[in-house]
Length: 380
Image (cartoon, rainbow, N blue to C red; front, side, top):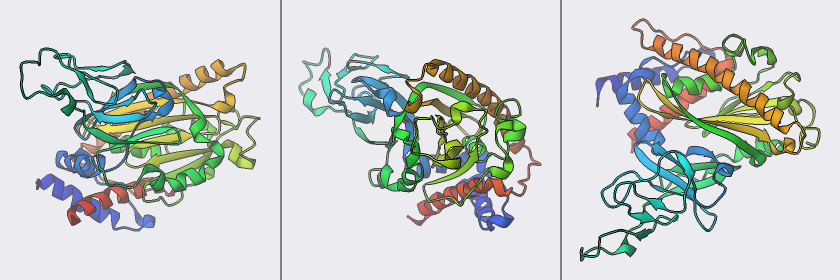
C-alpha cells in the first residue's frame, strides 16, 4: 500500500475521531493523494449509486447519455419499451467505446467496424463475419448495469448487491414530499471540468457559510447565516436548509402550490446524496451537480437545472427560466474561483486544516462517510 495513502487514511481517521464541537476540516492529504483517490474509485464510486441526471432528459426511445464511472464507460439509454437501461459502452468486437456525450439514436453503432446493437444491448448485425465459424450473433449482448429512477433522478451502480436507491433515500423522500421533486423539468444539462478536487467542490455545496463572501455578487445577500439550519447527517446523505429572501421570486412556492405552508414556502434544501449528487431544491426551481474525479486536481461536473412544473403554464415561464439560468451561470463562476483557490491552497506544504463552524456540520458528516467506506473495505 502506498505510503501517501496510509498517511492520508491515518490522518483522516484522527480527524474524524474528534467530536463535532472540536472538529477540523479534513487534512490536505485526503484531497491531494493519488493513492487515496484510487481507494475512492474502488470503494466509493464503484460501490455506491451514481447519478447521471434527470429521467425527463431521456424521455424518448433512443435518448442516451454516457459517463465513465470508476474507469468503466457506461451508456444509459431509453429502449423501445420505454425502459431506462444502463450497459457497458464498450463494443464486444475490438472494444472501442460506442456512444459519446449525449443525444438520441435508433441503434448503437460502433464507430470502428459498425457492429450494431439494439437499444437493449443485443447485437443486431456485424458486417463481414460470415466466414468465422465460431461467430454467433445471438451470443453477443452488452453487459447490463443496474439502473434505477428515484423522484425523477437516474442512478447507476456497478455493485449488484447494494440496497435500492429508494430504500437508501426514503428519509429524503419523506422530508421533501411537499416539493414534489419528480415534477421539476430539466431545462438544461451541461458538462464541465474544473481544476479542483471533487471533495472540495462537494464540501463547497454542503455549506452555506461561504455565501456572504464567495457569492456577494449574486445570492450572498438573499440568505442570512442565522437562518441556516444544519442537522446531523444520515448514512446515505446530509442536508441543510436556508430561507430565501422573497425578492428572489422564482425560489418561492407558486401560488397554486397548496402542499407547502408558512416558512416552508421559501425554504431551500441543499441535499448532498453520497457520494456526489448535490441538489439545491427550492419550491420554485432546482439545480444540481453530479461529480466524478478526474484525478486529485480535476473534477468532471454534470450540471443541470430547471423549474418546478407548478410554474410551467405561467405567461412569464420563459422569463423565469432565463432569470434562473443567468443566476446559476454567475454562481458557478463564483464557485469555480473559490474552489480552485482552495485546491491550490491544499497543495501547499504549509496548509493546515482549521476548526469548522457550526454551519459546516454537513462537511463533518461527509468526512465520516468517507472514513466509513474505507474502513468497510479494509474489513472485507
